[in-house]
Length: 117
Image 1 (spheres, rainbow, N blue to C red):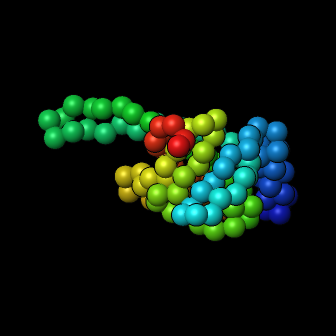
Image 2 (cartoon, rainbow, N blue to C red):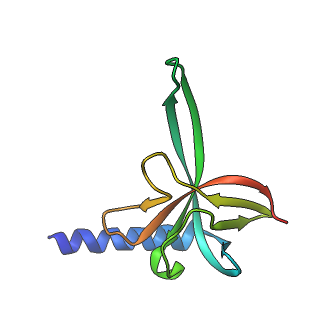
């Protein structure tokens, strides 16, 4: 039965990446590649020293791990529509996490770094 569930998860993930993605440029140092990514966002709420809650969010990009070919790292850039998004650590979670239990798609946390120059 677990094989049927895993097959279903794989099928759904392939449909998400196939029909809901857009091409982005992934850059690391002097290397770059164009890959498909699904846009996402992670909402955050943190409490400062005085107890005041501050809400924010980070831009996420869902990218097939095999297609990317390496693990995302802090400082990498994702460029889309003339904007740069820098891969960043998310408090206590690192700069990426797996999207689902089948561990095939990265959810990469980024911040908008401004115009691509």
